[in-house]
Image 1 (cartoon, rainbow, N blue to C red):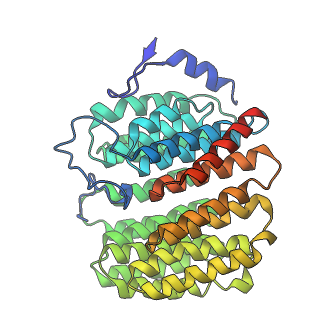
Image 2: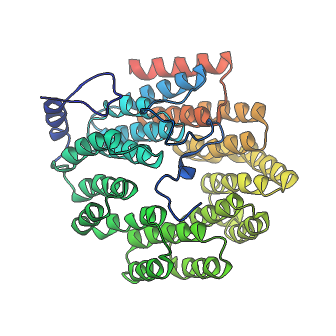
Length: 429
């Protein structure tokens, strides 16, 4: 029996084939239902209202962005299976996520169809979540959720994989207004996955539920579970954003975050601080964004980090600095990081070198210097090819192509030729 995935997919998926293949792989307003802020990118078109959307479709991209996405997925698919099935599907999923960030749901599904394990179901659910966030109704969203649920019912070796798919299904149900159905799923999955639902509840539920939601998050943190606390931190950040215009609630939420993160690793703290800073910028509050940047600086001492960690963590904050109005300082910081790469980059272990450089290229794109960004992307390509093993080389090439597609950085003829050569070499091994 054939199952058609969404009304807009041009081809038919054979459900039996999916089951056989997967079985072999493993045993702001108060009403946020139609919120699309989390799905937007600077290179995307303006958000289309739900009223004018007729059916799911890809937004226009430049031809080179399409080629970059295709190259990224092809590189990910060249990761050897076996022994790297998990790495392969994770790399493929990252390309699907890039498609959704660029408003390419049709392309995302075409790629997802080729994933050979449980992450196929997760990608279907993520695409359904994207569509629901864009304002599409159940007519277009539910078929994908049904297929994701079929995959979630199979044996994938570890229960958390099934629960991760079902958590994303429940998040989508919340956006569709199916609260009881989402809560039922939440009661059936592991606490670490169920905690993720709070992030979407804060986005989707209408009315003033601040006090109730704070109590629920406090209770989750009290469980002293690493994964649950991490999810709770991001949910607190959602409250920070939703009630940003209430200074007392915003301050209370920030206080809760700093109590909750306790002994959690500094990268997680920086990730949450960046989310708060982005909320401040979204609300036109540059002063608060700069204050949060100062807090982040306390953690970003180059003497405390290996260079492969310090570079990406610091580069990611240049965007905040630039958008908050510290244009000259952002440029100075970017140049300082570039100098570190030039002087010490070869000392980074080869498997980490390219991924350490990519965020710096993105930083130069942010501050309006695409030429330097392209130069650093070229460095990243060559850095990714130093390792003799096929898996990290394929992963790095895929990541670089995704990043360039997101930034809208067009490879010149030299870089295109080099990336095609690398892809050919990977395919011949």
